[in-house]
Length: 114
Image 1 (cartoon, rainbow, N blue to C red):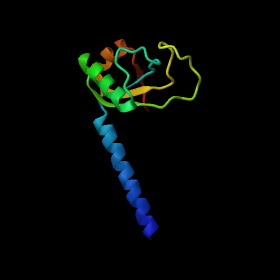
Image 2: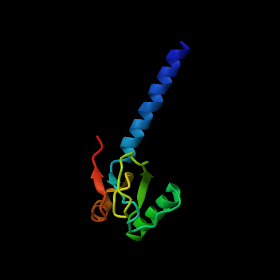
Image 3: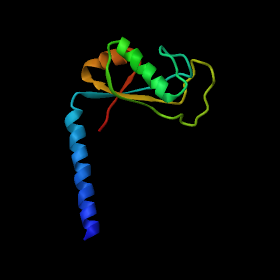
Image 4: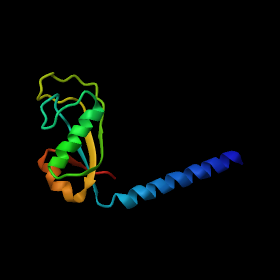
């Protein structure tokens, strides 16, 4: 009986979260960007937290406000070490639909989430 209550509670929580995401994301657009080793328009920080802050500042200066932003870890592939080579990371962000064209002009690629 206890297991059944836990399962029902889990299903209830998961279903509530799904509805919340769908309700809040109607105007959200998802983007991805593949940064270079060190040749970007924002400053790279000593860690991901500083780099994310610099990216947010860069986007804000371009009149773009993001809702979420993350940096993935390198994919393990070998890249060259030159500044203009890919870093193997991805910057993923969510922004309002009104920023779609501005983000595309800055090189961000729209992701379609099903």
